[in-house]
Structures are given as structure tokens and as C-alpha cells.
Image (cartoon, rainbow, N blue to C red):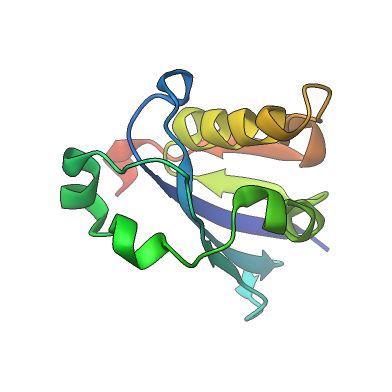
Length: 128
């Protein structure tokens, strides 16, 4: 049985090193290349302002996120969901970089996403 997770994030900006955060995680599960309906989706309160350029891209506002949980509130559910799966990510370096940054904010000894899942790779832009 092959379990794959198609994953995407939205963020407050482009650089986690500048304090930007994840504001949305969306995942779709496939087993043996068939959609299962077992999806994971969560909006997140970033505790910082979203760059106006980022709002133009994804349309998610600070006001919308005001009552949403923080990454720390959902991290266990997220890690349990992706554990052992192969991740398929359009821009893997970006999304995995942000996910690893969020994990390390909670615990400097946290496992990196690449250690939690079987594999991650980037779908080249030319494929979409």
C-alpha cells in the first residue's frame, strides 16, 4: 500500500527567518494513487501581520485568522497525519522550510519534516 499526501501551505510572507509564519495547511491523502477523502485542513493564527503582497496572492486576512488556533495547537494532529507518508509538494523547499521552522519554534530538538515522512519532492513548475 502506497500512502501519499499532497500538501500545500500559505504563509504571511516569504522568509521564515524574517519571522514569517504558516497561516494555512492543506493536505489530501491518496492510497495507491486513489483519493481517500481523509484530508487535513487548518487555518492558523500567526501572531503577526500578513504582508500585503501575501494577502494579494492567497486572500487570507489577519481578521479572518484572529480566532484560529496556533501551530502549537494542531502540531500533534498534523504530525500524526503525515507520519510515514510520501509528501508531494509543488514547491517543496518553501513549504518544508516553513514547516521545519514552525516545528523548531516549538522545540529546537523537533524532528524535521524530512525525517517524519518517507520522502518529499518538488513537482516542477513545467508540470502545472
